Image (cartoon, rainbow, N blue to C red; front, side, top):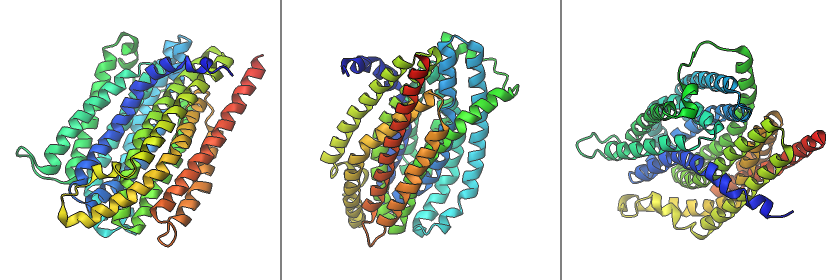
Length: 458
């Protein structure tokens, strides 16, 4: 193996990935800002945002996972210069994402009473419900945005979703500051103010990305004159066949992290707040890997369209290598700064809550050690999933993710996460086990499929 065969792709992979990473980080940055600002109010409020967002994460995983079906179809159509097929993939994807967003909003509203049945701290539940009422509505514009984003990624126009996300973040930060703390004459709304900021910023995000794509020569014809309700059953079926397993893959992974939030809630509000801090920090580094996953999906999809399987494999491995390097760097940073990073989220000048804040930081710093170790597994498994989606192989990877997270990962989290065992750290040991299993099995699947394609085309 000549290393330069892979490293020479780094520049182009980075060029394609960087805007996607920034866009993905944008979504997480919304949560980061919410958590830091809400953390200044108290640990119960931080735990409430964590609990409310745990329901949102599950809904988002289904919507975002489903929308990824658009990218490989558009990438393949773009490589083969088939405009009609590309527009059809986008239009039908947009329709399905809109319907899914509305359905998920309804499900979130009906799911609220579950909070009382999950043995979560009662003060946390009572704060979380009004927050979820509002933030649930933001799922509709978010999933519609995802349809535009995945389409834009499929055309290798990865910068425009990034621009829309940056604008949304600026709006979110300003509205959070004004509405959480009641600045410049605005009402002081606490965590409900954070929910308003999220909702408004996501509505702006959709409008802005449509306006950007409408103004570009390459994408204008795709996003205008859309006959929204003139539908083709074959294309709907194709998207649903690709999108449903992809949604389930993301759901299985996100759901185990959500289960970690709920298991932490059984330990009390402080372990739940600490879990939220560690989860928020590790999800920001995960978005770097997600950016590479999208690049993997685009480039593998392009090479699949060209039927160039040797090149497909070389390019995919160059992306895996880049992801591995980033994961090692982030793992090292988490390990070195595991005691300092959680302090960003709490106010040590708040003497009334000093004991709570100190406990939260102590627990979160231990969780970051576990997070440091699973950076590599997390990066490998998500980049592999992107490559397999580019190959339009989704059914076996869905089974792999289910086994990894729910047959292996969750039972370990449940057993080791009890108060008499390892508590919060035990929960995260289960996450590490699930991610590592997924990384190994998905790598084996990709390796098998690409070798098979190369031998068949020889």
